[in-house]
Length: 465
Image 1 (cartoon, rainbow, N blue to C red):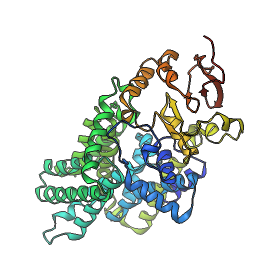
Image 2 (image 1 turned 120 degrees about the vertical axis):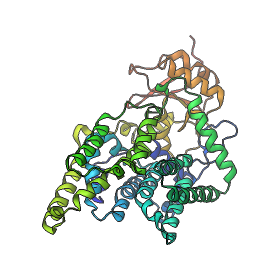
Image 3 (image 1 turned 180 degrees about the vertical axis):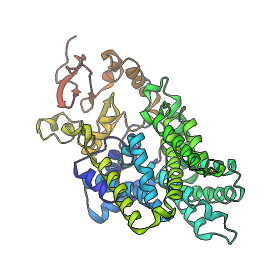
Image 4 (image 1 turned 90 degrees about the horizontal axis):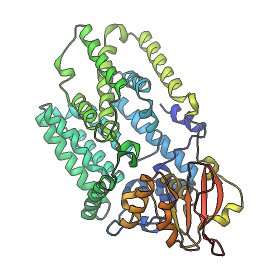
């Protein structure tokens, strides 16, 4: 499990979305209001704990963006994939469950390499689902209660979607685990409050988090304008079939027990799958991790049998399953670990590019969030801001309307004109025209920066049209 992320990062793999802005934010030492143009009322950092931790690592190591990015990817992968083994008598069962998911939904495995703080929340859910039987202990399981509370606090402080942590507690109640639901609910509430207090502005933190969630969905008229993880999904049929096959396997062995389906992990998996038809992330962050826990527990029941318990058999099987898992994840089929479309732009050494970057106090306008991620990662200390940052819903309303019109019109040149008309000499418009040709906006002069990116600026002399 340690070698897997090391091998993947050895390819030069580079996440291309929020992981870049988290690392750059930590290095910049600036608030978001000095990085992106925000609407009024949105002032707080949405991941204060994660940026504080990355900043602390930077202060100790003096690593730059590339090293910090590799560190975050490796640590978060290991947190999710290693912590469950401490709750299992047969840790190879966890490796077997992960292997099943590599076959049915490799996109989920890819997400574990994105270096984003949602992995903290996913690990919190996994640990809770493994630890909950200990909460049934009548001898006051203070250690487990403290673990759950601390994980909830860290998840809240590090990742802003604290409200999703309530769903596992609801599933405990649906499974009629009343004592566990009460204790886990109290620990979750205490953890969320503690995590909010760590931000230094608990009430403002809650208010802006809820406002952020509404802004994300209320300002997107069509699902295609949302990021992929916020769109509805199609059911992940392969993983659903795998879960059904595990149930049928238990039935075929003559070991059917309603408890295999009437338990919190299975119920959360079903709830996440159903809610995924509204937002894919319910399945990715809650349902699929719960399904992994459930499959690991099912496999542990099988591996605990006499024929699997002999040391030689167990050793052979463990070596086999972890070797196949390693080979399946780390192979570079279809260039999945080496295809970095932003690499040319991120590491362009052409000195002419410097003269085309925004001036001090300038604003970068763009039709693509990836421009923000890549440019901010490359220039974390740059003296300019970005109109389109990590979440369009946080833009000023007028500029958000312009951006949505650009998306709805598939980047038609005329949709950019509200921005072009208010550009200054220090501002830049960076676009990705689908045709690959110079954008049809003659009011600006253009420079091709590679990877399909064109940088536009006001000319020294007005252009007649």
